[in-house]
Length: 230
Image 1: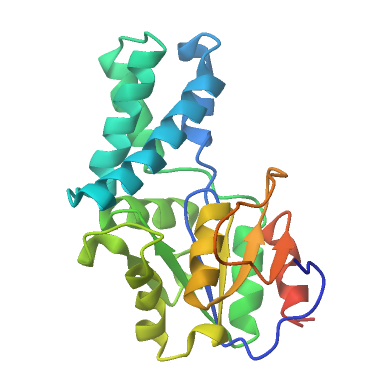
Image 2 (image 1 turned 120 degrees about the horizontal axis):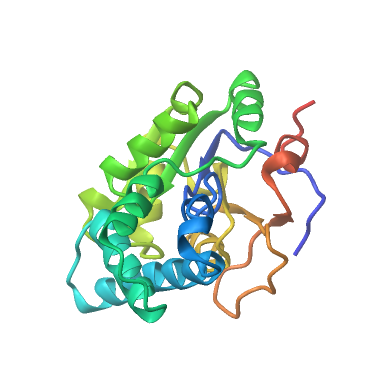
């Protein structure tokens, strides 16, 4: 995987939301005192189960929106850690609607728009969840589109999800740069044919899956340079 060559002929930059633009651990982190040493474990179990449920529901043909998936995953995590606190559960769900954006996100989106590139989010998140997160982060004016799986009733990495971006911008897959911190999502978009930048925030090894990202970064801060934006 090449990590330092410029990407050419890109007209639109499309971003995964959770883990890429927004810190999925920030909800549990804000409840650290109430979780009594279990915040990090809760964040890990919650996220892992959330992703598992999207894949399993897609395979089973039993779609529910990401709000319910997130709540079901939280209930599993709380049960696994033997935390029985309904008000805390409600607070965690509310905080997930207002996840912290990673610090470089607004400036990077602004530079991309300033260079004339289209920007969008392509997410598993339900419209309710992603609209709340975008509004809380104050980045709505920096996005040309917010695309969700809700109209399809299936989750990433189903190819029909990535097709949404092509249809929205009327561009071929290779003219769209797709950014995700989730290695499986990066692989899915690459297998679909997009130009993919894996934002490997946590130093993970590559997945053994079809689809190889074109480039790898440790944060979004290096994206404008990769795209040849001064």
